[in-house]
Length: 216
Image (cartoon, rainbow, N blue to C red; front, side, top):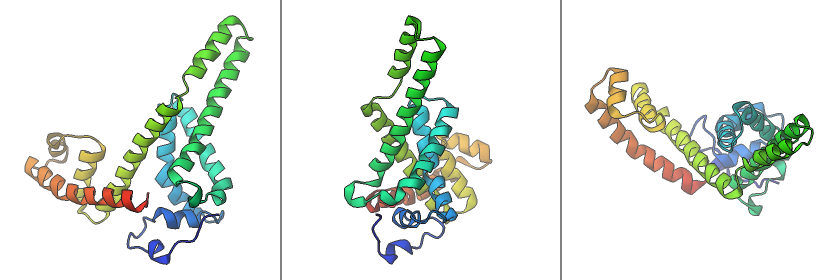
């Protein structure tokens, strides 16, 4: 069962952005739709992007997202932080769903080819598309860090000037150059550099805090 955490963690000053510890506690109540929506907002894109990069189609990746969330709704009460971290536990949930989809695809291809030699080759080719554990671990880590960065940007931007928040989003998450941002927003290049530098320092501190505290 999910262990209780101190109220000081639950009632931090992050407003509508909950700590992961407090959110996981509330997910134990299946009727708490708001908490499940917060969880979905945090992790659904991470799950979908990981599935997509593992070799599945966009439609299949969306299925993985929904199936994983459904499975979590049934098993979240079983998660015990003492038995392992949430990051690894969630990866296993995603890994099993991905494997199921590749096996389903292989079986469907086998049926289409009536187990002919050509069909056997196709099934093997399909199975080989599954990311091996090392590749999937790498994909998961990259997507986890990207999602953590998105969360940190959201926290910094909550207290920033809307235009400044837009600059940070474009530079950090959209990969735009300062010149591209200046042109898109019709502002000076110096303004972009100043905002990026000032908010960038806050962003680095927030990323470090999230990593150290385990709030994501």
